[in-house]
Length: 285
Image (cartoon, rainbow, N blue to C red; front, side, top):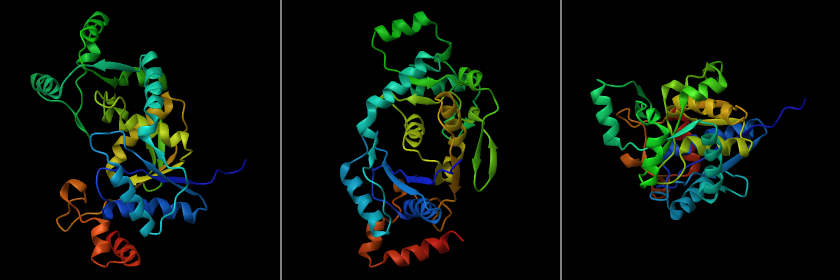
């Protein structure tokens, strides 16, 4: 049986200009594809219309080209496929794998405080299951009066469907047993945009044939959940490479919100793409 070529991707959100951490992530995926004679894709994850801007999308393409990165066309833009994600979510809901959650952040915090605390995952305290316990009548009444709601994964039901033997392979850390309970009943359809990162990324990777996902180690925990979603959706489970994160002199990872120096700024200071490649190589040794 012929072996499928490696397909990697870089999937930024156009909420600002790229910095060195983005450059390292993009180059890692691109170099793997080159080394293994595979394909490299660029995907624009712009479902959050309140923060994403087209000007940043054009800027990131300019930055990637400056780095010497090339990608296939057309580029998939998530905002063009919202109806597609909605259909996926509706199928999961019809199977009893999603339930409506009417809780605000304050409601959740009060519930956690009343219970004396809650386990924590990568996205904060795990949801205590408040709305999972609502009766069908309560749900119908709240929907009828127009209460806003998100859709959460019914983790217990999903695990009943898939069983507990799910695994995924990371090239750095080896075979991993999936533990989606680390994220609990995660929101898969947000109130404001009708989908979520977790659902969209799993669907897109499978649809585009991505079989090696290279991304930062900060998303390692999320992969446990993604493995479960792949199973319930009948999608293949790719290999993963969770690479280290670039950090500043204080040890804090580079981030847009902390105003990490951008690639555009480096160019304007006269740093060449070749020099940046060397800098990034030294930073990760």
